[in-house]
Image (cartoon, rainbow, N blue to C red):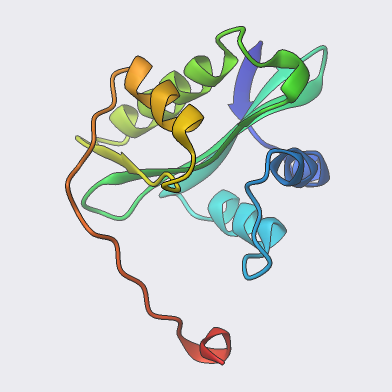
Length: 140
C-alpha cells in the first residue's frame, strides 16, 4: 500500500469509504471536512492506495497544542492486513514532522473492536470527559 495526501479528485472515493465504514453522521459534511483539512497547513487527509485505488484513509491535524485523528477507515476487503496500523503510523509520522508531541482520538463507547485495535497499536485510555455545544445553525 502506498500512502500520501488525498487528492481533490479522490474526495468521492474517500467519502464513499467513510460511509461504508459507518463513520459519517448526518450533521457532518464529510466532503467539507476533507476540503477544509486539505486547505490548511495544520491538517491533511492521508490515503492508502492499492493499484491506484483508495482503500484506506485517515484525517490528521493539530490545533497548536495536540494532534487529532479522525476518519481512519480501511475497506472491508482489506481489513486484517495491517493497513489500519500503517495508516496510523503515517498519521503519527505526519504529526511528528510538524512538531506535535501528543495524539488524541475519540472512539464511540459502543465500538469495542476499534478500542481493541488502538490498544493493540499502543494507545491507552485518557480519562477525560468530552463535552459539546452546538453553535450557529447546527444548534437548532
